Image (cartoon, rainbow, N blue to C red; front, top):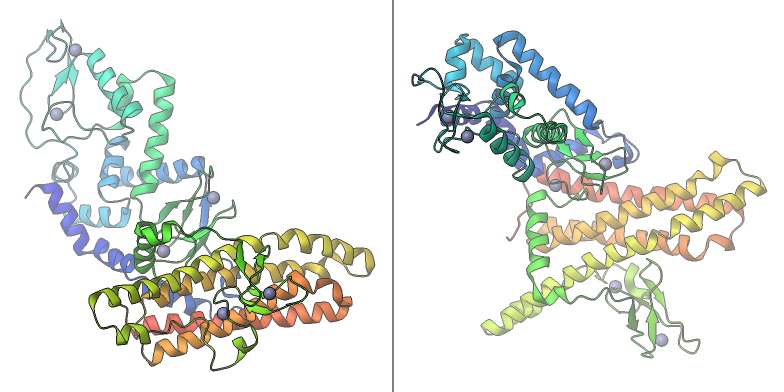
Length: 494
Ligand SMILES: [Zn+2]
Ligand SMILES: [Zn+2]
Ligand SMILES: [Zn+2]
Ligand SMILES: [Zn+2]
Ligand SMILES: [Zn+2]
Ligand SMILES: [Zn+2]
């Protein structure tokens, strides 16, 4: 076993092992989150405590960590950077290991930052192995040497074309990484130097378990957390995402199931043709209905019909509030009575499409309800010209924020429900899901249709009562899911 393997193995036995556990057990992380925020009125609006760092501040933090290690080891900064890279920027674990046997040379050899054996080098000019020109050669501690021009083109190629920031020695089978000071003696082009510096910072972010690039388009900033766990982080650009998997914040479904779900959705030929249909037929008079808002409580536009129905299941709207009606629960009696493999597979497909349809439906509503920000903005301006102050009208914006969060949560509840096994706990979950869904549709309907039909004081009271109650329903659902994860009650089919 090489000494590099030893480092990585030992590392994972101690610190790294705990961290990996933390990172992998999604359920635990989410449960922790719910505990921390139990007292906050709006769970996700409790300010996440992550830092946001741009390129310059990342570089400063990185250099500071390097300097801390350098002060102890008393060796070149470039060597310390390679060491830190090998320890995944876990400075504490690196120093702890060093103090076990505080001898810099041994430590650097064990970490393969400098070679154990070096061959003797003939003095004077020699022939460069690569270009065969005779002249002064130079090289690394491993005594692999080449002429300056060859080093330069080798390093430039690694930086510019391969995008590497930890570059191995040019000799085949030599795994020695070249320290930055050495790289800089060969590279003179300022563009290449700038690329190298960017790559070093990128490598610092990507190997550091407490940092993550913001997935926002063209953002270029990173978020920093104090513990590596699945949790909501927020960037200054407005992106809100899961620290572990960088997807949209996806509570209640955990990172692992979400990954399976997204893979399933992208693999499945049945869903690749899910057209983002904005039109369906009225189930009663068959006239084509266009959906231009997020609310799923539809009223047929045919004045002779005016049938009220649900966009998701196309059933009449009226029984949706009653306890016996389950728009969100898949009826699996077909699967139970399936007689042959073909019927089973058809039932499985129906089941999957049931959840997929609702997952996509809420995603579509989320997008359509984005338009509400413009609607409430003009309503808020109008209210300010009447009698209310800027602060007094903010409840409308807040209502749309809550609506968006509920849509996102509902969307991910269908990925959660798809994998969930039927038992008493899943029935409670489905009841919570149904309640949240009903309340969310009512809030959506209110914001999309009824804003103008109320006087200001009643309007404010109604909207506030509604969004507080919807938010309360969302918290009940999420807390139930988080507590279930903590107590390990959820049984998933994968
Ligand atoms: Zn050469
Ligand atoms: Zn070498
Ligand atoms: Zn960002
Ligand atoms: Zn995640
Ligand atoms: Zn109709
Ligand atoms: Zn329905």
